[in-house]
Image 1 (cartoon, rainbow over the protein chains, first blue to last red):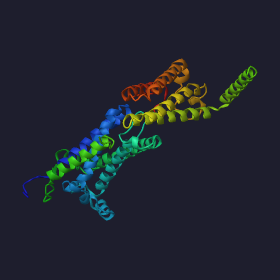
Image 2: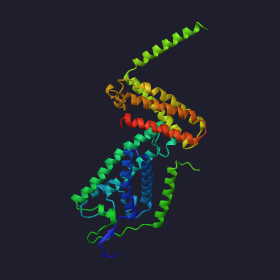
Image 3: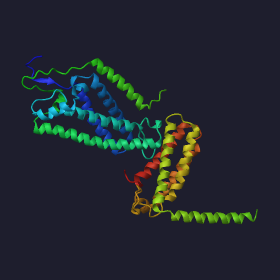
Image 4: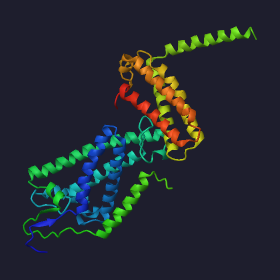
Length: 223
Length: 153
């Protein structure tokens, strides 16, 4: 570890690409859904499905700060963080509170996507790729959940953005820059090591998630 | 035989009067509930058609769904009497435009019946490509009318 280096790598590239792709695709899915452009809406949904499933995999196999085990802390650690955080000492990756925000975001987005797979529109014309495994009524219910959880997701996203604003404005901590470049400034005397990740794990994840997504898109109908 | 015929006609006339009386006695809430149930049935039939066209293409199932669709579509035109719009106070997505442009609406309803009949005519043929093409025509007919006359959710 060279003590000369003024920056430290805190986010691996997959975390960053996941983050910004998810925002873009969420916007595409929202816009196309509102405008009844269902082909595009489904495509965006498949991509979001793949991203979120990959992120869950990466939560076990990714770089240090990508792992659930690294950033999910108990109530004691959260209370401690709330009491002692000074706005100057940066966390190594997600802070104890932000870690749970990641889980909340992943949960709502995955729930929307799963409901969407089974959703049927009121006319029985447009539907998710797995809708023919369920009845019209079940498909309609899935569609209502799809919409209901979407609204919940907007609330969670709002909270996430507000929290970033809080750190940015009140604590002068830039969280957006590192999510783009992967690096943040080192605090004085900080010895946090750079984040490393395994290309083999990434490749395995991409192949498995790609195959699963393809199966879902084809409605699990082989041949 | 010759005496049975007038009796039959009389009975028929009585039934029609009674039927008309029942229809006119139906409250807006009942009429709205009836047409919504029918739309739901048609949605289910559309889904059944879509499922079959995307998978097994079972002729009997296609035919059954297409017949349900055509028969139900035929009932819908008469279930939009004046006073059954949003002003009735009953929750409905039916827009006032239906009654403001009744001839346009009736023509659209008639088009649906015609296209659904066409679909029912070929649904059992085994020509999946033709059934799929007509299914899309029917779906387009639904969507066109909904855009104009149904409130956005």
